[in-house]
Length: 171
Image (tube, rainbow, N blue to C red; front, side, top):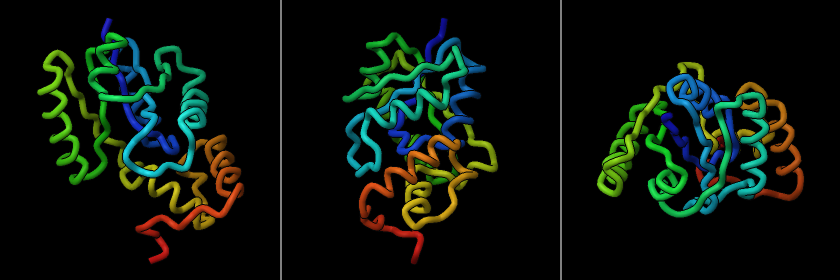
């Protein structure tokens, strides 16, 4: 049995993430959506909220589970017995970042393979940052995220006065 993890912050989960995870589930026996708890970037949703949204996205898929984690991704993979880390590639700049990360992870854990899946064409522009920025500027993200994520964004953004992202789409 081959277990893979798909790590990320998933802030929020969007159709690009969902596409990569479902395609990975056709390749591997089990895919664990590994929700990273404390990245070095500011997030809109708490770890618990992100885990709940990711669980809801895959509630109907028995091959995809969801777990939160902290620390090194390769250590989390070892801890749960995963042999593969799945990553998604959207654009050329993703390749450079993911290539360096894969080399570092391989140095740390030669026994864990990194598999990169190319995103579907319709999702190449999607990122959590893009979704958050559009939502914060009251744009329509309904074609980018499942309805329950869209509602969660509306609730979260309506809770306060979120600061404008540093590289705002207004400019």
